[in-house]
Amino acid sequence: MPMTAMENPLPDGLPSLPLPPPLPPMGGMTSDNLPAAPSLPQSQKAAILVRLLLNEDIKLPLQDLPEPCQVLLTEHMASMRIVKREISRDVAKEFLRELVTIGLTNSRGLEGALTDLEGVINESTIQKMRREIGLKAISDPWLRLERLDNDELRTMLMCESNEIAAVVLSKLSVPRAAELLSSLPGDIARKITWAMSMTGTVSPDAIERIGLSLASQLDSHTPVAFEEAAENRVGAILNQAKAAVRDDLLESLEVEDKEFAKEVRKSIFTFAHIATRLDPADVTKVLRDVETGAQIDAFAFAATDTESDNAATVNFMLGQMSSRLADSLREDMEARGEVKEEIGEAAMGKIVAELRRMADADEIVLLEEEEEEEEAENA
Image (cartoon, rainbow, N blue to C red; front, side, top):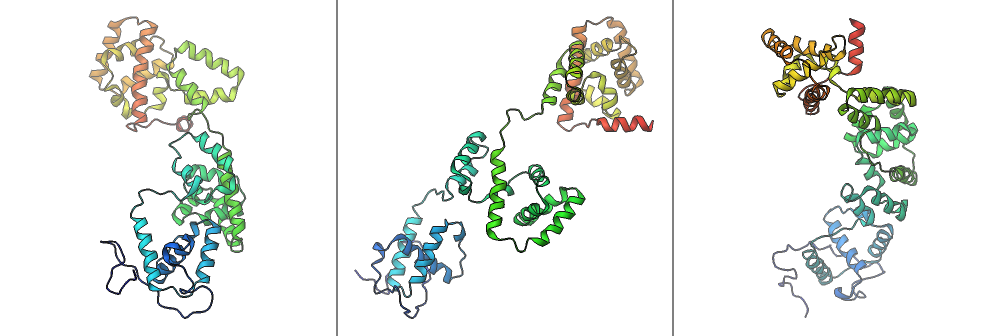
């Protein structure tokens, strides 16, 4: 049944679309040799819709379409000259009817799905699938680079030439590029900035190859089972070990691998380190939630060898208390007498555990090893 000017061809509640102005016939496909809208190929219907929207200066992200689709769309738009009003309305009505029935869509292909699932499914599975689909299937390698954290991206740039780094900065968003450039050493940042002056003649194909190459480096990284470095994991274990066992293992490590043993020692924090790593103002904060009995056991056991680092920690902590409280604890230590090694080390462990908890929660700040050395030199 033909439409009249008074009929509304769109579903109830949906706005009407603007119609393109009539164009003079210039050959090619016209509305006289076009079939009715329902029998038009989907690609020709898409060309009509795109023409309608472009007439209203509505920008469409058509660059995200696969290249063959962009070519076919362009050819259809070039071949059409005049499309009757009824056909334009039928196409628009059909499109809107389909649009309101859509619940979910994923038009970004396998790479888009893998990107969405990062951090949700196993990382090794994502890398395996990316290798299987090949580098050409990576729809937008620059989007992946944009999403990298600053440290990982900086490490990547430090391994590339200044020219490649300049291309990367040019492809990143301006705020992200500024953040990354600020984190680089001054001399490298200056060289990369100068290299950006030579990127004006870089071809799109070269940009694509650079992006795919950098993205392939991300996929070639083997996932690791442990987030913490080996020295930190060993140090955490030795922190909880008995002093005799810890010292014995560290001596053995010195023989096997001196550099690794050095890193492990840096990660270890024991009762003996408190005197040199804890800010004097934080002593009372650390002891506040440690039961008095544990303090007495720890201090009495640690003070047994008056020349040891443990004894130095006891004197350090007592020295930060009020005279009355310090004298009271000394009296309790003397009354406590000899403390068994197992009880004493467990008590010292409670103080160290509370200190570490507060440091991890940023309630206190421990002095770094470098600060200790500088203070010792200045003294």
